[in-house]
Amino acid sequence: MGASSNFVYVSNTFNTNKPKPQSMNKAELIDAMAADAGISKAAAKKALDSFTENITKTLADNGRVSLVGFGSFAVSERAAREGRNPQTGATIKIAAKKVARFKPGAELNDRIKSTKKK
Image 1 (cartoon, rainbow, N blue to C red):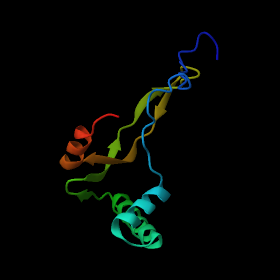
Image 2: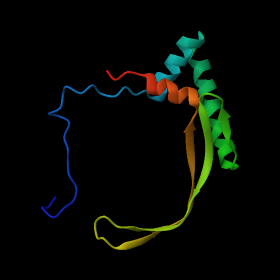
Image 3: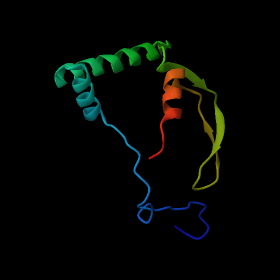
Image 4: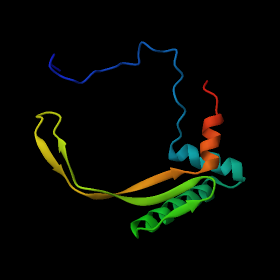
């Protein structure tokens, strides 16, 4: 990286006092679902796979999935626009496309807002 670059690299190796945000992968989610529901991991995996497949199918048909209190999954369209190639600065055309969106519900928002930072 040269001196003319606008990119700033920030390393977190010096900031060890900040707690790492908690995250969960698919396997951990399956484990949690199985424990919470008192079912096998295989049953929890099957339920999660069905959930994601049905949301995917609905969105692929331009549908909407609403889970009251949790949120809504929907498809939104992004208009075509112009952008810039960050390496060359050249103007490029970015095509219109459909994207999946998630809008959190009131209960989820309230729960997130009331969570205290550690």
